[in-house]
Image (cartoon, rainbow, N blue to C red; front, side, top):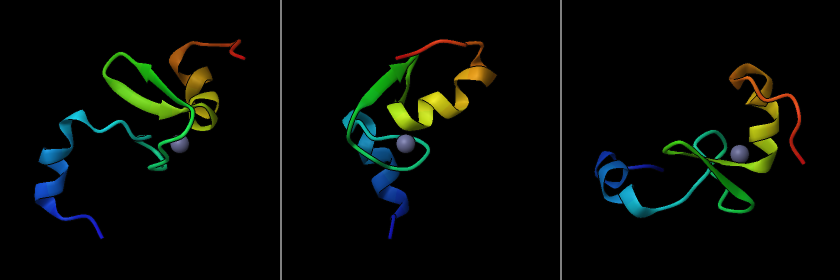
Length: 51
Ligand SMILES: [Zn+2]
């Protein structure tokens, strides 16, 4: 369960924004994503090759 206050507290927490994973994170601008999710959204972001 995610409490509303935890969302604000978690400013320094690095966590995949899409799936919540903390492993294999990539920072894209100010958004953290795991590699797996990044690869899924990469085409939408304009990346065609990664890893
Ligand atoms: Zn993810």
